[in-house]
Length: 153
Image (cartoon, rainbow, N blue to C red; front, side, top):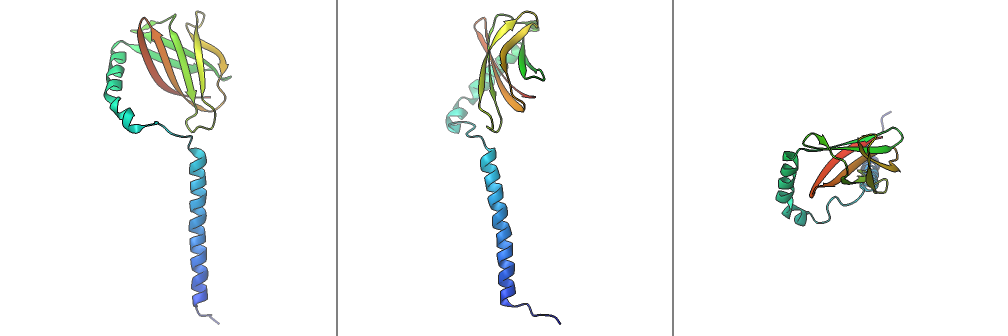
């Protein structure tokens, strides 16, 4: 014997349907809030006013032949190899800001020191396991160069 589809059945279908939709929305919103580490730029309008200057500085930096290569050992030790016009640069002021891309770990800043043995810049601090966005700042002979890179440990 077949039962008729009544208004009560339709009400039950509606509750189940909207319950699933609301549950998925809550899960997705919670995941988005926990996964986003914060603001990318404090004021996008002000940042846009400097865009052309940043592009020009990047072109000058590339024309001067600046290059930086971050190397990370398995234990998290960071080494930065720095060159300008194909020549290794020793004695520069090098700093690295390491940021977790999703804000799950606190930002770290390292002041690097020249290591003649490795012909690179090293620090005593170690990066924990994970993915890190690096902002390398190098100052040498009155010039400043900026490099953005990403490493995984």
